[in-house]
Image (cartoon, each protein chain N blue to C red):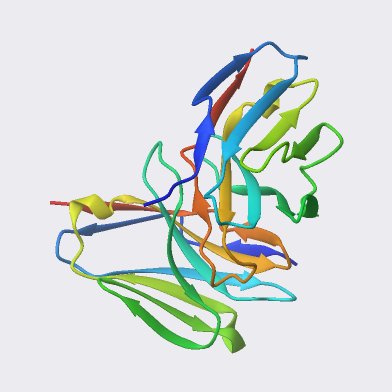
Length: 115
Length: 108
């Protein structure tokens, strides 16, 4: 069964540095998402992406964050000037359609640790 | 508003039936989804309700009442592997809001 893959599985970065989290969505999916989950807390929506542009973003997704689909397969989340509170699990997800009926398939996540 | 409420924890024994409730306060509601997440794992889609009523998928069923802004996930014939966190989620446009999650512990 096709799956969403994320790299790296764990990223350790010094505060103030930039990080890029990478995702390869399922190949025939058109909608892409990033979520954040702080340890022990709920999954928080960051951004959705369709047709090479952001569809919607949450209040969390400020100027510190950006997303890009640099080629036909990768979908990246860049975090600039990282802060301690950016430490969390970041999940990428993709879906074939827009409706809520279309399930989102999640990757295994990247654990980001800011020191 | 975009607020969802779930019980924080539920405990049950193997073979039992458990119901996890979700209430929401929304505008522009597009339906209620349920996801399962094991510790250290990724959320996995379980079910979706766009209309009122019950949707059944094997041991799991999900119910929605839009007039009451309420839904639930029903898990039957509980197994140890069902121990996980369960999140309800609502879509607003392309923005998805997850509930705080319910941690289900299944005891032998």
